[in-house]
Amino acid sequence: MNRLQIKIVLMVLAAVSCNAAGRTIVVSQDVPADFGTIAEAVADAVNGDTIEIDGGTYYETIDLGGLAVTVRLFDEADPVIIDGSGTSQCIVCDSGETSDSQFIGLTIQNGNASHGGGIYIDDSLPTMVECKITGCTATHGGGIYVTGSVASPHFEDCHIESCVADQRGGGVMTWLAGSLTMTGCTVTLNEAGNSGGGMSLESTDTITLTACEVSYNTNGGINAPSNTALILDQCQLLYNDASGAGGGMRLKGTSAWLIDSTITGNYGGSRGAGIYVNVSGADLTLSMQGCVIQDNETGGYGTYGAGLCLWADTTWSITATIDSCSFNGNGFGGGGYGAALAAHELVDTTITNSDFCDHDWDNEVDGDWTDGGGNTITNAWCLPGDIDEDGAVGAMDLLLLVESWTDAVDEDDRWDINRDAIIDVTDLLEMLGEWGSES
Image (cartoon, rainbow, N blue to C red; front, side, top):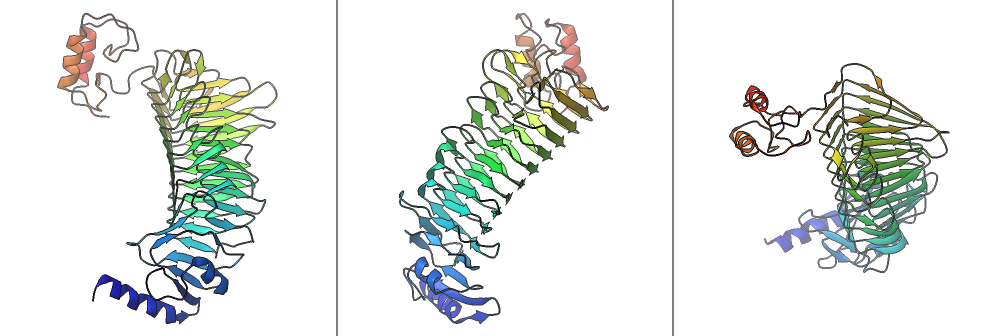
């Protein structure tokens, strides 16, 4: 029995099956099935049913009309593609869909609309699992747009890639929405014309991202203006780019809690290449615990806080607590203030049990802050003698030190191991003291 015959048998069995959760309705373009389009299956479905879709490309919009049904692919080896043809949305949930309205394993592509080219959610709570949203476009929310005060969708193990918004939220945008939760999702290679290349988040309730990656987005990884709260737990903000402030993440009037998260390799043109926090109409709180902020870079001269910039004003304040975090390798394309962290105006910052290294000489933290104890703020190299930055001190580092022996140096050249602007025997001795060490 060949694969097609096996598929036919399985789909016929699915079509006649019935259980307590409801019927299974089969959709296929190629083999015997209940319906040939998803829209026909939705029109026949009732709450509790499952719509299983055979592999293929379906040029239609899925609108459940409020039904609590599961829409899923039949065979993981045979992708189901919902294609908007560049003219319409792919999935619409605006009729009060609940968390029992589920979409599993679908690829959503080429959607286009003013809001939510791929997926549009208004005052609904659908669940999306293992879906891929790619190549979708919109004015706002190229991939996904969520609105409505009681909206609360959940995305799990989804991938939002290569979507574009003319204005905000290349991958994802929430607007005056209730809440949003995402677990194990990736938001990558998206672009926005204004802000939030990866995500632009404005909600009336808590937005929670758990074990998510936001990476390689243009015009910022996450833009969060005026949220009630934003929680990032075990997330990664990697190599996002912004021409202005906040390459990895920009918080404006948004309180945030970051737990065991990594902010690496982001670029911001002016302030806070890793994270930029700015007040807007109210006091706010930033809490960071167990986070790594490294290798973020601002451009030009006179910039602030390559790793983290806290920018309050004379009216509203920022209260920041930083515990058990590591800041390393953040810097400026030109010159600036606070390579690791800069705090401006009404900022109450307390730092405990945190490490700072590999930054511009004598310019790691700018502004007032409270030392809560247990900190290592040394203006030194994280691993002295690791000139080639491969995470170990060895023969190649010794060769590079010897080659630079007569060169003019300053304290920010890695071969100046003790950062005294002179290459001499003391640098050699310090390297030999670290010989074989690894970071």
